[in-house]
Amino acid sequence: MGSREIVTLQIGHYSNFVGTHWWNLQESSFLYNPSVAQQKEKEVDHDVLWREGSTLKNETTFTPRLIAVDLKGSLNTLKQEGVLYEINQQEDIKWSGDITLHKSATTYKNAYLLELEKEDEAILGDKEKLRDAADIIDDVEMKDSSSSSKKDVSSHNSQVLFGKIFHNLDDVVKVWSDYIRVYLHPKTVHIVEQYSHQNTLHPFDIYGAGHKAMEDYEARMELEDRIHYFCEECDSLQGFHVLLDTHDGFGGIAAQTLQHLQDEYSSKAVMSFGLTPANLPDDTPVRRANRILNSALSYHTSFTQSSQFFPLSLANSLWKTIGDYADFPQLDYKLMDYHTSAILAATLDTATLPYRTVNPIHMCDIANSFQSHGKKVGSVSAALPMMLETESNFVDMVQGLEGTLPWLSITPHCLNQANPYMQSVVVRGIPENMPRSPRGLYSSCRSVNDTLQVYLTENFISGLSAGTVIKSPAKVSTPFPHIFKKSINRNGFLSTNQRLPFEGVDTVPMMTSMQSSPDCAQLLNTLYTEAKKLNIRKHTRYLESGLEEDEFQDMLQELAAQEKCYKPNSDMG
Image (cartoon, rainbow, N blue to C red; front, side, top):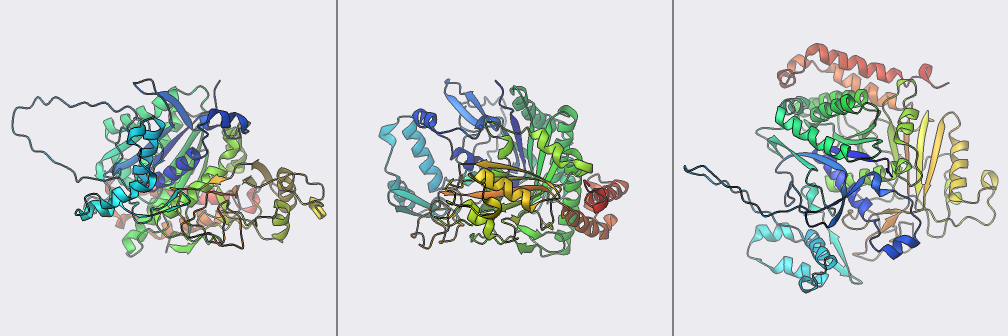
């Protein structure tokens, strides 16, 4: 029986940051004990995004149905082919002449990744090699202490509280593989060989660079082969998730990939999420111009070649300047990729639940609902965590809003204050402790679901709203960063008692809203206005990479046309 599978593509370094957190969040909710799994109600169908396979030793594996695209040098200790199908092979070199050996710098796993290895050894029954978790930290910090480079990479702020290790990875995470806790299939990682990560002499910083990279026939065929591999093993493929960087050359790779999906899988839904870090360099006019041009080109290709496109960033302003960051009341995050990507990942994990549950809405149905009158750009808002006190309930929370919204927009230049044309709202992790005598509009409510439906009906009168309630909260234990204020307890609720030092948050209740909103017009208008100010003839690298002047003007016109879809005269009536 098919599980309405979805194939995910992560195209770009920041997209892989977000995606890694997303897979970690999902894996943390897996139940590996069969007896416990049978006793607990199943809400999420993990087979939608994950695949079961087997190694050459006939060991069962469960890996993301994923293709992750990045540059050379972006993997650190992660092997491109993964470790599940590892075979000790050595290539037989036939060349009889002189050979020059180029050896890359040795990389070391941090203490968190080493701890995962120890856990794997325990699961595999290798008891003799298992050590106490606290000893791992001592070994990592003391072994080869004379080598400062090794010590700097491998050690970090870790403490043991009540027998549980508290990892602080802020200083050791450099790339997304530094905190990945899931196994990847050998077909997952695709490396763009023409460019290297953070190479300032040969930068991958413009949209056209991605286009040029995809002109390489072998590279393009290899990427398409990976997509076909995961699609062909699906029984009932419903569509694709595409996470893409919109601020650099990965936008060009995403454009070519989306075109391929449109050509080969035109009947399938494609949900695209354009991701932009909140800490991009903003110190020169050239960088600002590149950011605007890359975004305009990426947004255009994404909404024209996807079923629905959702731009996401914790920076509310991206064009002239970067700033006005999303201010979540109970979060204390840093403007580093490891932190900001975690917030976006938790939001995506929650917002996409309606078509990943055991009894889901189909992905195509949601996409079609958002597309009314040609609206192809959506927005996303989130409450992380929901502002619930330990002994309170959902009815008290929504009644206490008094006309304010419970969430913050994480779509740049889009406040999400207007009544949406269409929205999909998800509430998760809320206890069913209802007040004894609900009052007013909520007097007939007997559950969280009843309360949500009344809230949506009464507060969003002019649009269509679909509500989904999931009992399980978002699991945000390590390696999710420690971004929650001390007033949030381990279960994610507001408390008068401060958390102990080195005590993390394990779970949080969340609320998200994916919208087709009139406020999307402001996003499109500001992008169109800033892109139109730029004389494309002065940006010769874009022209040299294949962008035609007429093509640029057509793109601007289509941005303006998409904006008009959100004007009152194109409302659903």
